[in-house]
Each structure stands twice: as C-alpha cells, then as structure tokens.
Image (cartoon, rainbow, N blue to C red; front, top):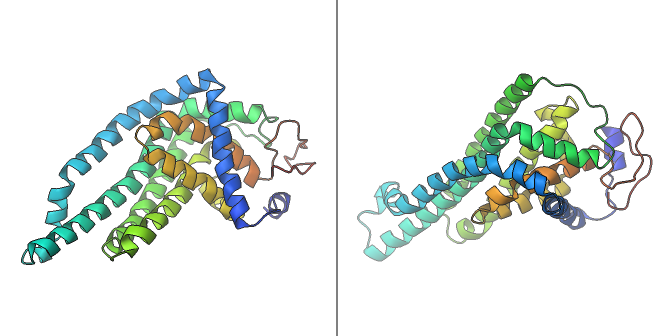
Length: 280
C-alpha cells in the first residue's frame, strides 16, 4: 500500500483532490453516454431496485406528518405554533435519515441484483485502460456471498451514523445546515466504499482493503462519493446514473491503487504505474 500511496501522491490540495474525485464521476457519465450497451446493461437492475426504494421513500413522504407527530409527543401540550415548528423539524429530520438510508441501501441492493451487469461494465472500463493488473478468478457464488456480507455491513454503518444525525436534526440551524452536509459526506464515503467493490474483488481484495485504499486519498474518494450521493437524490437520478457511478468507481479504484486512469499510460505486470500522469 505504501508504494501505491506514493504513486498517487497529490500534487494539489485537498480541494483540488476533491474536485478530481467529482471529475472521476463525470468521466464515468461520459463513458456511460458514449456506450449505449452499458446503458442497457446497467439500467435494468437499477429500475427493479429503484421501483422498490422510490415507492418506500414516497410512502415516507406521504406519512411524514403523521410520523413526525408520533415521535414528538412531548409537544402535544405546547402552543399550536411551537408544536407545528417542532413537527416540521422532525419531519425534515425523518426525510434526511430516510434519504441517507435509501441511497445507501439502493446502491447495495442494486449492485447485488445486477452483479453480472455491473461487473461487465467495470471490466469494460478497465479493459480500455490496459486491463486489470493482478486479476484473480473469483467464483460467482463466492463473490456474491462476500458482496452481500459487505453490503450489509455498510448499510448497518449508515444506520449507525444516521440515527445520531437524525437526533442532531432537532438542533435549530445546525440541524438544517451542518447535518445535511454531514449526511452527504458520510453517505458519499459509504457509496465510494460500496461502488469500488467489483474492481477490488477482481484483484482478490476485500472490504478492509477498500477502506485502507480510500483513506490514502480521502479527498478524492469523498469528491467522487458526494457527487454520486447528491446525484442519486435527484428524482430518477439513482436509476439513470447507477451505471455511470459503476464506471466512475472503476476509475476511482485504479487511482487509489496507483494504476493508470488514462489510456496509454504504461503499467508493469505487477500493476505499478511506470509513468506518472497529470490526471493522477
């Protein structure tokens, strides 16, 4: 990992690396739009998963007023104005928690449902950059089992972080400014960890390896993840842009592993870059 870390040593500050991460997602969108086959491969699983999660979130929106009143019984005896204000804040906190859990869970479930499709997209991106260094043969059922286990851990983490954020949502001003930013940051990090699973599995690497690699270039990982998270909050954004996120994640994985993300950059058999590119 030290060698890889040296290969991707940043030449700009944290803000520049964050924007570079956003750029990886935009590059993924570009690859996606230029490849109609990728669009067809990736949209079908996202449609199946998206129909369920959009319905679930729609139900939350529909019943949010009732749920807000249910979780704020302490305000029943307050004046109508104060009771209404508290319930509005509670409703916003519920929607924020629901949005975080929906985006992370949608990504996890969609990747599981469409594993063969998204594996193909990720492989195609890497093949265009010289292939996957140190690739290992991973049996489908073994890969699926590990993917489900890792996804459940990440969804569990989103719940663990989401509950305190929900409680903090009741704090005036902070709950409506700082908390959404924190939710996007945490959600973005979890999405980045989730989405690079496929290229890491191809290299025989697991969840701890993903976390370690992303921590070595955290601003870039966050830039990519936050961009995906925000785009997934747009109506139908998660369904339409899921394949682009997978394509961008293949680029992110190569970057944090010190492998070329620009066609034509040399790489040895051990997967180490022999020429540092400005893009990295």
